[in-house]
Length: 236
Image (cartoon, rainbow, N blue to C red):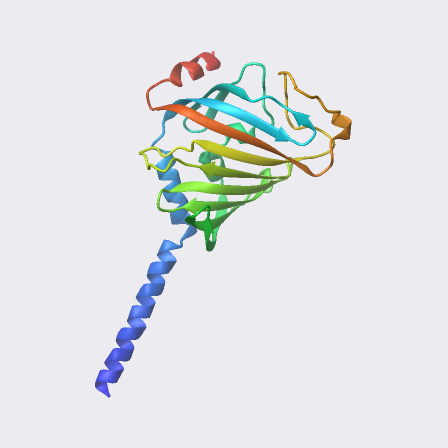
C-alpha cells in the first residue's frame, strides 16, 4: 500500500514537473526574448539586394541596389530609378514588432517549410498603433522569425516569409524575404520611377488583388562600420 502511494506521488510530481517544463518552453515572452537577443547582435550592416516585384497587371523589371541597417531600427535603401512602397517590406526589422506595449500569446506548435516553429500572437495594447495583430512563426532552434502575418488599419493584411541559409551563422540574417501585400482602392501601392516593360492602367487595378515583392540579400557586411557613414550623411 505504501509502495503504491509512493509511486502515485512520484507519478504526480513527474507530471507536474513535465507540465511546468512545457509551459516554460512555450512561454511567448521567452520565445520573443530569444529573437530579440539574437537580432541585437547586429549593430549595423550593409548588403546588396535584388528586388523583384510581381503584380498581375503590370510587369516590372528586376532591380538591384544596396541596403544599410543600423540599430535600433534605421534602414536606408538605394535602388537607382526605383522606389518601393509600402515601405514595410524593405524597412522591416523585429524591433518594429517588439517596440511599444504589447501582449504576446502562445498559439501552437506548427511545421513550416520543414521546420518546427512556435506560433506567437502579438497584439499592441495601444489603440493608436496601426498594427492590429501580428502572427509569428518562430524557429526556436535558431531564434529567428520564419514567417509573419500582420493585419494593419492602413495597409490591410501583409505577410512575410523569411528564407535562411542552411548554415547557421552568428548573425543569422535572411538571404531572401518574400513580402505579400494587399492592393486596395484601385491604387498600385508602389512608387515607381523606373521603366515598366508593360504599363497597366491604374484605374483598372482589381480590388482585393495581391502583390508580391521578393528581396534577395547578397554579400552581407555585418558590424564592419559600413552603415555608419550612410546614416551620418543622412542626419546632416
